[in-house]
Amino acid sequence: MASLKEVKERINSVSSTEKITSAMKMVASAKLHKAQAAIGNMLPYEQKLSGILSCFLDGESASIHSPYVEKREVKRVAVIAFSSNSSLCGAFNSTVIKQLSQVLEGYSHLGRGNVLVYPVGRKVADAVKRMGWKAEGDFQKMAEHPSYADASALASQVMGLFAAGELDKVELVYNHFRSTSVQVLTHETFLPVDLSEVRKDASGFAVDYIVEPSPQALVRSLLPKVLRLKIYTVLLDSNAAEHAARMMAMQTATDNADDLLQELTVAYNKSRQQAITNELLDIIGGSMK
Image (cartoon, rainbow, N blue to C red; front, top):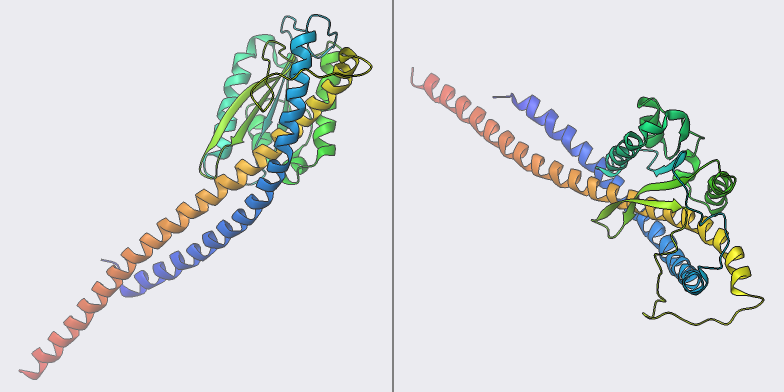
């Protein structure tokens, strides 16, 4: 059995850890509220804009000519993966890294020179380096402080390569924020745009818009904006999921520390009681001599 001093030191250590995890939980909670507000403000706009675009594409898909809807044989592909810059957020990063590894393995037959990896976040960037792949840039700042300018620049870069025929497909891997306790790993195609997936208006039915000068001209102007906005929305989505995952991880750690403190306190009290009993027995035994 551990001595009273050892148990006391362990109690102090666990108590200090509990204070740290509790503080980190509160910080993550504050950041989550801010991230939720950002994604909550952006999602309705992005969904409405995508809905308007989809209605045009549904009716005008046969006459739409855009480099972003062209489907061709996949010979060169880009994968954009979103993670966090720091750890202590449960399985948030490991799920993205595992999915990214599977995606890259699936494209290994193309050769590493034909698979471009854009890691947004230090954790996934380090994983890409460990796997022996080359990162196409440093996007750690974007993961820590999401901004439309940075997201738009990244979107424009891959859109330019796709339009020039240097990429045949662009995929996204990220965690979607569904709720505070649920983050959904998502793997989807960014380019080419799939015209067959027609979205409906938020009211549940397609809307017949009247536009000038023409739907075709509007779509050609609207589609790049929607694509840039998509990357920004995914960035905000991943950021909210990160803070939610960290808050839940710190809550679990705090609860575990509290349970351990209770067990250690009971063990300390039992040891202390035993020590007092032994001293009393010594005193009583000495007085009877």
